[in-house]
Length: 495
Image (tube, rainbow, N blue to C red; front, side):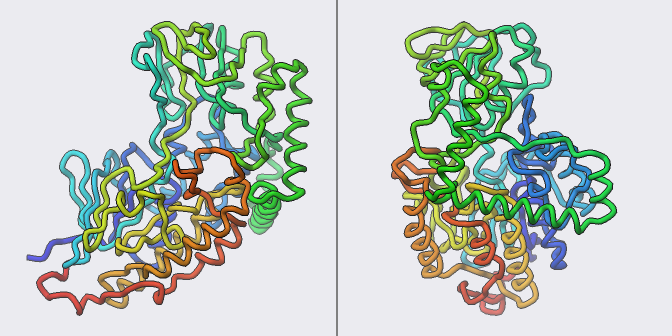
């Protein structure tokens, strides 16, 4: 008896998983399932609910181009508003019957004979699929620093990506470990209510002003009545971010302009020379992620807030130690971001002919167009290696990936294709492009960041403009793949 299987299994129910599913539907593919370890759609916006959580990309660009939202309340939407938008999109495209939540993947294994993937999940769950699409993203597992005495703290311990709504910070002594993207949103939001707030910053970031504003009813009505105006607005924002890319990705006169803007942001808010010194980076603008905020620096000047410049060395039962001094705390908050896989995957992936992803990627992840890996047929990545944005919305990069993957699956189903495996030379060609271009960027200019592997290789970001990547990834090319048709398999193996 033949084993029933899915045409496509999508791992992840965030923007990538949803986008992949919607584009499969547009291609007429219906035999698919979405699985996610969380409790609902939303991905990072379902999980990141800390005070002040918001996107640092304008709302009109941080949304599906094919499903614009005329009702954004702000130029930079909050986490709650983005999550609500995603739930609305999931409902409109009837994705919920296709989704199964609370499913954590343990392993993927490919069968060379049947050309099928077996996906094993916690609790003994098993799925068999012709194609697997990974939409789990790189930023999903909270990073908790391994610190001496980390388990000894007697008060409440939180992470920004696992915030608890029942926590009352009013009048408490709060220690925030981290000074990056989540900290610069959290600290201004909680500073007015806490008793004392100590922020531990290992490395300062370049931060430019945030051009945020409330979108009024008149502007929203205009977008509802004339949707093309919102599309024009989206395109204009995209053009501005690409212009910024000239200074963020590459070292150009625009880099100096943005650095001056960031220095102005410090000078207008902070008068104390010592505090200015603590928040001013000593590396080139663009080396690390650029941040945006209007209230981070003012928050640091509050009487009840202290910025400690230096790494945390120890956690005690009653506080945090840095620079040889202990700072008392009732609540410890890790605003330390996510664990970024430097090699392999967060679970075992066994491909064709004995390939193991952890082994193949031990010196750094690579994939053709960031989507397909030689040795792993019928496996596609959204937001795979070197497709991260350094200057614009991640959705600009993932939308062509959704279309590419859906087109590949459609060809497989309509042409009786059992297996698609990207050619080794095509993957190597893209990897050479990445390695040759990367030294021209700001990210490898002698600086350290989470973008880099331990060996100094940037496997995270695309070393160029978003439009360049879109042109490369916009069209699925069957000639880039080794193709096995179903009629080439033994009849007993065909599912």
